[in-house]
Length: 405
Length: 121
Length: 99
Image 1 (cartoon, rainbow over the protein chains, first blue to last red):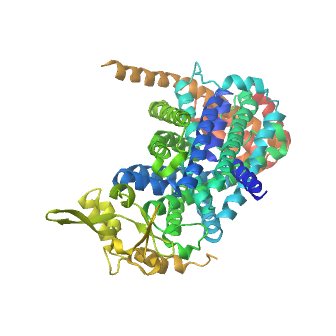
Image 2 (image 1 turned 60 degrees about the vertical axis):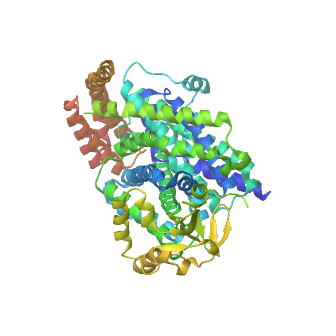
Image 3 (image 1 turned 90 degrees about the vertical axis):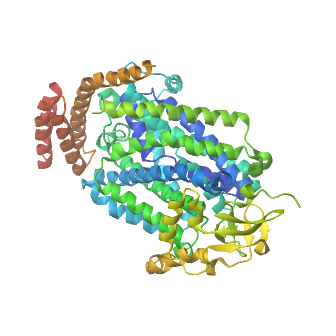
């Protein structure tokens, strides 16, 4: 019975925590520009992330290690440190995007420019991490994150025909704007398969002391939680396609995205969008900050844990403090948050193999996984999606840079 | 007694103290070369700059210069097999993390920054 | 050997050729955005703080883009909105929608 409660909580946490600034921005742009056409990107990304998250949980349960700890141990400091540094740098950009998202939500609400909000928002984030425990942080924001279910509701209110969606699950290329389409596809995948997601999940499994009895629970949580989350991402595409595309409204910035829930909900629509954006980004920012602090601490063997008082884990808490401060500075410079978001998502897709491939090696190493090593199928799914995405990103990013001049 | 693979099982492995608190990672292994006998493990080392030195000597020196700000005595921190209590996923040794040299950085941060800020339950 | 760089260059050129189309699309998108925002404001569905800022942004983007002449009517919309003049806003919407 208690396990069932735990599973339900885990699922709710995954659903509520799935959407972030990357998914909202990329899905909104995709729906407004290309209708349902890019649903396949969310679908494939979600499929990959289900596998990766399940593996991440299984890895921590069976091996007793967190992923970062095991990466250094398995590959040695020298081989490990370069991909690690690259991932941390990209994480910083993504955190800046998430903080930017919260600030933009506040700008939409109050009319006061997003840059002004950077420091106060960062302060709030930091304060929460400083005084709260892991459970409060994770469950609190995830429960609030359920507000993003409004996109699912909106899709139905606007009259989505599920049969039309099925066709879009197969990848296709449009006749026009191919470069931009490719760039969005790559950004969607980077937004969906965020490395911080499964790295954080691994640390969470250790923080929550998951043992072998959680193996099945982990599978349920990963599958149902991530599927539902992916569904919400798809709902954003659908809503943008039904509410914005017919009028010819492109989502070049958040001002335009903010309109998408009004046709479905009237006056509430605007505020639901703002709330969804703010809450989703806030939750993601907390996770991202912790994920980075976990990574650094586990890489160097420091004591870590959100359940510890900051004084008990000074290096760990300093890590997330510095991280948040740097990200806030990036936002305060006034860099366009929408552009920063899309760019960091695309870059994520490029460096994804650097994290996913070594992780697959770990998942197939019987020394860590004993009899729970990966099936061949799991390996193929992840390798295929990750490598393809990276290749696409390497092509799409330069094209987009050229095209936007 | 099965073989222990030094690189796979020892190097870069997490070290815990006797209360199972994280102490650091095995950043280096010291081997004693003997005439007419195979090399022997002289000590295991927990020392950040040693790990950085694996990227290059200059890297190691730069890390050491930075670390000298907070390091007191007892560096580089080394321990031998006699101190190892258990060898499994992590290496447990007979030490007290809180009062060990690898925690100099932790204590320094606590004194200078973290401890000075209010809150933290 | 020379084919690959040529293919990349062609792809880049293709992306550039889209560029005028892209600007037009963007300009149309911002005009419709302005109209929609104004309409929603008139119906009380979005707050004034947001509408004001969104209209200014639309006007800035239009001025930079392929339809700079559309910027001025959007400015007029914004001014009417800031005055709280629903009648003027409705009138301007009707005018702009007609164009």
